Image (tube, rainbow, N blue to C red; front, side, top):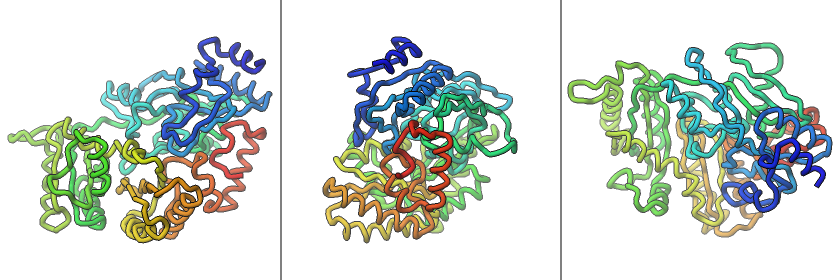
Length: 469
């Protein structure tokens, strides 16, 4: 009670939630993880975050930072902890068109930043299905990927500066707007992707990009993933690297999507095994001026590439988006992945990455191995094919922990044998702690633990995440 009274004194009556009011932050988005937090602290500014952390450090109370709570790896599990929600720190402080930067607080929702940048004909290119609820702090803390990594890189590539509150309450000001700064260790990169275990990101300076003048978007059916990669390389060559997204959806995913959303339309009248959602973007105004037929040059370019692909046997069918509504319809299928994979009671969501030319090898081999592990299991997947990230979900026949662990271990074995990683963009949280223990280089783990021990000697900040004991 004394701790809660002290927190209430820092945050005010509206800044602290207890009891039943904590329910929204007593589970993760998937429902796989549930807990009872001590309270939910809702600071309004960085100074209040600092005071909360100073108090938690003095009392040895665990603190779990939370943004949109849209993660898939149990990264916000917080039994008995102070859930530190940054939802009230949600200001886009400044948009600077001349330098193409934005200064944002950690509680800004991704779509809010998209809208703010759009008002200046710019974009913040990180995007994924949860953009309407995911917040900047969580996106930075997990180094989120998304559909546009192919062109713009991961979140880490789009951040210039950070403001971070350390576990003992000190405020570390790294809010530089510089593109070059070699003054010591890159602490910004250390904090991005640390999943809130080393510090609490409260604000950031992020890069903005010019808003594309026009998009050309299509669903394309191809014979196999080898043909898809050849098509991707041709598109990159013909467009000068203007491919924004290249997303793979097998027919099994399309069928499940249509079952989940019966009002939706199939991408083609004929079902195909390999469906690719691709998008290219025109930056130059000249590529967005329609010709005498009303067609945009960027669309004409895509049509030409696809015609050549048909002649070369690289494409079986194609449908171009003729309007923004049709473009959004195509994207809706890809961005519904979260809803599709959680339609079954047990969903083992693997987030692996392999070299681009090994995606087909991985999928073929897993199709052989999975029945040997669980004859009644079902695989469900989509892939950011342009960067080799496979969201390989398994619906096992039962929720047996040993069975699930064996499947995860087999997926890891295969991904690593192909030169890949067991974690691409979802983070480690608690879900992948066994994977970290099995797979991460022991020396690397020792270095990580040493860094954690120096910055958080009491182990109060998001304890039990990222680093196995």
